[in-house]
Image 1 (cartoon, one colour):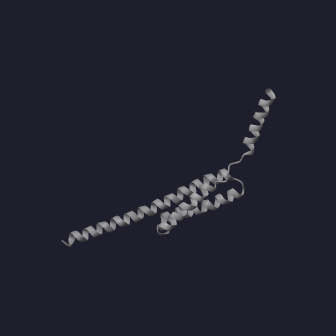
Image 2 (cartoon, one colour):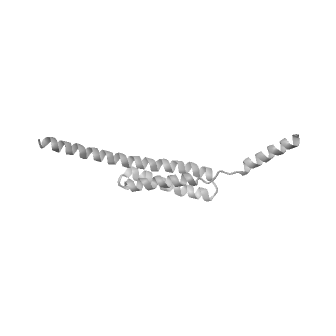
Image 3 (spheres, rainbow, N blue to C red):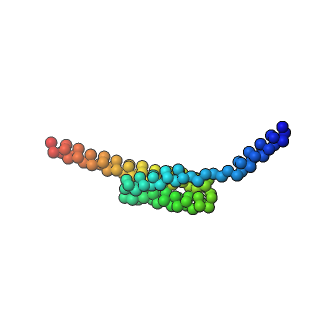
Length: 116
């Protein structure tokens, strides 16, 4: 009985050591999708948003290299940052569009008020 318990413990420890962190392909896809969204919304037209898209692109490239080297945990962390930067670019782009729309609405309202 003691031998069986020892063998099970040994097998479990070997399995734990032998298992590696899986390639973060889902996080890679999510990061790339966020980058695409930012670009499609026009992030390149806002310097701050464009910077975050560039950072995200660079981080995805770094993560791909890490994944090729088997550094999947590090790649996962880098991809988390890439997705966050891309999502920030999306929000900055949307904020700029909202501010532009609000300014146009104010100008239209002022034009209508002054025309009365």
